Image 1 (spheres, rainbow, N blue to C red):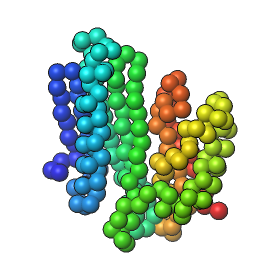
Image 2 (image 1 turned 30 degrees about the horizontal axis):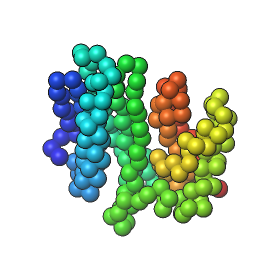
Image 3 (image 1 turned 135 degrees about the vertical axis):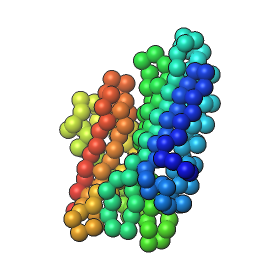
Length: 190
């Protein structure tokens, strides 16, 4: 990687990928983020013929993937990936992915490892569901289905470099085609 921005365009599409500065400094992060970016790009390009069939011939489809370095507890690097695709007509696709690098072990962690295990993940997601239910006008079953095994979770640092809590991040349109805003839910450590 030579730059923090990568673009590509073709006859009916454009792609923009933005990497954080830390990706220029850390090879492990560079490799992980590039792998994710290329998987997203391949999936977007593979679907271009489907998008083209369903839209006028002059439609230009776009994909934007932005990685940002987020505040992190000591010895961790946290990267948030936000994707936003225009796929024709009034349709957008969005997504969120989290990358957690433990600098002590030089390994990437999964959300379940960060929270402590399967039981802790289930308990955390129950708390997230309650908070979401109080924020939205959706029924509880829809929220339950959309949060089952959800893993776009970031640790939120406290003033001492530890973990104050966890933030679940939901992209626009994740819960409903009419809900274009993203949602964040903070659950403090007990």
